[in-house]
Image 1 (cartoon, rainbow, N blue to C red):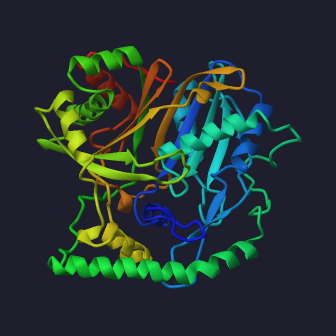
Image 2: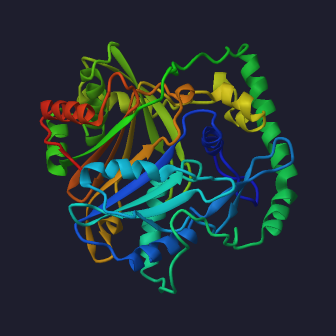
Length: 442
């Protein structure tokens, strides 16, 4: 949904993720992790950090006081300082280190992103970029780091990018003073509210003419009585092998991905004959750093193949999920947050999530002079609590860099993915049955 006023406003999707940040739903932080075989100079990472501060991730949410007006975005250069792990991280513990980088991100008070690095025990460097899902989706984060990598080569070193690790600088929150930005927003809040209410009231009347909308049904969200333990793994497969297997099955790289994630879940013991897959679709018409996506649903049966899923995915792209109970989705932006949460609870959640991030930009193949041996692009869930456990049992994220596909898996059902070792072994066995040779990324 595009902004209709002079002020940049949050979309419906932005606000759904803002509610999850506030504890209403599953917390989601996006992450990219680079691995290099060589040490990366701190000065190089400082330049990337400086570019990110001044880039499109440098923004925060500001509240509005007019009922019905959408929240607005405000530019800010406040940032968590570039941090370095105090000691080398063993390769087998790299994902454990990466999982700690999603804490204390705040898209409202800021900062909503973090850049961190660690020396890896077997040599080289790991670099993590995390951001709140409120700021961007997966493709948006990729566009942000692509821009920062290009810009960083033009930024001179003037000193360190911040104080000691873990301390947020009291840097100016915006290139424009807060008062001026909020004053500008206020000038258009009434106009935005009028347009929002016109859309909501008109859409609701049309929905009522078709009959009283059914009460939103439960989405299958789960609860747990003990602390939530989730496990993750990152695997790589030669691109030529993946593409050859996909073609051999009469499918595409994407339909093989969806098929593989579903099969991994079934092979782990999931008992149902049908798996509902949530498949995000990038809706950008140009590179933008935001949440520019819609979600489709694909029903997968045990008899499906990459060829049949190719057709199912194509059909699903024409039937994207809509607002609650047939009402206009903008209703979620004019009602109180807790009501909006009840109306949209579990939106987009199904048994599995299959997020294909596509081919990563060539600029990400190197950090300065250092070749990247791999990039893991995925989502993590800091602070996941039993009451916010999603319906999703297994999330999969696929990306391609050069001649390698990287598959990141997050097991969200402790019964089906009781440990990282079991998730890894099961996934590698399933991929092997599909003719794919997978090795652990780290």
